Image (cartoon, rainbow, N blue to C red; front, side, top):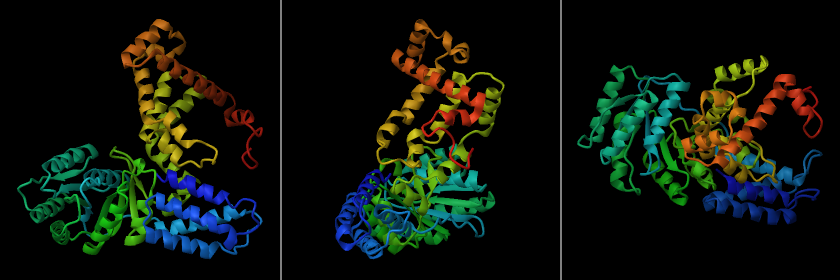
Length: 453
């Protein structure tokens, strides 16, 4: 997300290099580049205009401090404005009410409400230790009701049954009663969507909202919908007391302008980002961290939190003990590492959160280590015998042929994996013998930074 905007804003900041201070003259072309970058990212025109005006007002005449170049000073100003537009601070769900606390999801058809309901339930169950019930009032799409029931089982949530013959308000009454009797803490209501905003749909969702007495009303919007998403957000906001926004399909959107537009126009906080199809692919939205990601500064805090949540501490400790005892790193260990990386969305998702220098082709890096590639590598290891995983050196030509046939790939793919394993094994051996210090000595610069020795 925001890949295009990141590149254009970086180019704009670099255009001020060599200048002693920011002036009306030298910033004119730079702001034009920023304006074009925002428009190309599908940011709404009124938002672009106010954004540019505020940057100009803060930037022109700004004295550059000893540690900042004009380009860095502009990046700092843009970062501050991005944080302001995106909501200034993280806004978690307010669940401090008498249970069951009702969370209602509204939005257009195809925005991803049903999968978002399941993702949100999983997050509340695992992170907040809540007992969650799901219910669908989408009586126009029986498949959506069945989908939510299936997802409820997958994430470990309760489910209130409904059918296409029921009235939406009657379903809500039954769900509230079931939630109370089941001692559910949270009831998530998945409402019906339409292909466009119409009066009938609005009246129905307003009636459902009133009957449910929703404590949180989240507008679910497809981040790739462009200006249509902004118009829909404004229409829903005028009919419902929205309390927040969920941006879905953010992993497939290289522009990201919808996030800036919807937040600024509705004034409602973005609560979550949907970043994939899996039920755990829902991120809390932190405006300051997202602003840093837009400007190519990375989001290391979110990466650390994700590692703590999704990386198995037991497996990591087991591997550390194994290496310490001098027992080598084998292909079963590599498989564990690959699977844990896949749980985090693959290398692409991790690279999104790391600071990337301007001369690094992050798109190429992501493509070379995407989730599909990781799953192929796991398939190759699964085609090996326990002995081959433990002692990779015994894998000769005939074994490679059998392994490749077993996983439906080529012998070249097996060779590539074994080469990668050999490199990782060497690195692990160095770590077991002398820790990180020995590894760092071989890196450019000759060792650890001051204060870390």
